Image: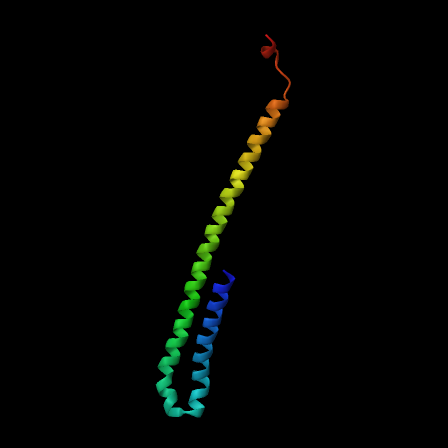
Length: 101
C-alpha cells in the first residue's frame, strides 16, 4: 500500500510542479510559448488535482472498510470471551441441591 501511495504522491508532485513551473517561468522566458502552454499547464494541474481527490476518496473508503472489519473482529472477540467466561463460571459453580436429588 505504501508503494502505491508514494507513486501517487510523486505523480501528483510532478503534475503540479510542471503546471506551476510552466505557469511561472514561461511568461518571462517565452511570452509566445507561454500563451500556447497555458492550457496544457492548466490541464496538467487539473489532472493532478483529480488524481489527488480520487486517491483521497479511495483511501477514505478503504479506511472505513478497515474500521468496519476491525469493529466486527473486536465484537466477535468480546463475544467469545464472554462465552468462555460464562462456560468457565458454570463449570466452577458448585452443584445445586436439585442436582444431588
